Length: 210
Image 1 (cartoon, rainbow, N blue to C red):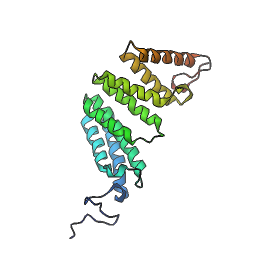
Image 2: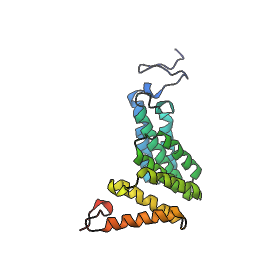
Image 3: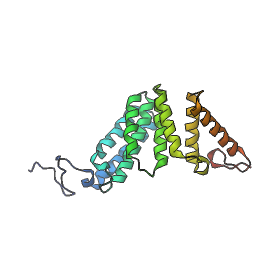
Image 4: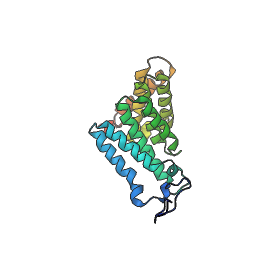
C-alpha cells in the first residue's frame, strides 16, 4: 500500500495532507454541520461542547482553504468568520476574554472589504469583549471602528444596521461619561431617537409610528 495521501478526489498538497480544494463534498460540508452542532450546544449553554465544535470546524477548514485565490476560498473565509464570531461569543460568556479576543482578531482580516456590516458586527463584539476584560481603550477603539464602518447615516440603512449602531452608541456612552467622543455619541443617539420617534418615523423592530 502506498504511503502517499491519495484518493479519487484530488492530489495531496506539498505538506503531505489534503488541501481544502481537494476535499470530497462530504468533507467540505463538515464545517457547516460542526457549526450547527456548536449552535445547538450554545443554545443549551453546553459551552465546552460548543467551543469544541466551533474549533473543530475551524480545524477542518484549515488555513490553506481561506485564500480568495483558491476555488471556494471566499466561501471558506466566510465560514471561518462565522465560526470565529460564534466561538468568540461563547468564550466571552465563559469569561475567557483573551481567547475570545484572539478569535475576533483572527476573523476580522478574513472579512471582505465590501462587507462593512459584518466587519462592524465583529468590531462591536470585540468592544464588548474588551469591556468585560476591563480594557477600555481597546473597547473604545473597537466601537469607533464599528461606528466608522456603519457610516454617518445609519437611519437610512436596514433595521439590523440601526440596531447595531444603537448598541455601539449605548455601549460607548455607558463606558465613558466624559470626553468629546462620548458627547458626540450621546448627541448622535438623541438625534436618532428624536428622528425615530417623530410621526411617520421608524420604530424598534421596523414598525412605523402612527
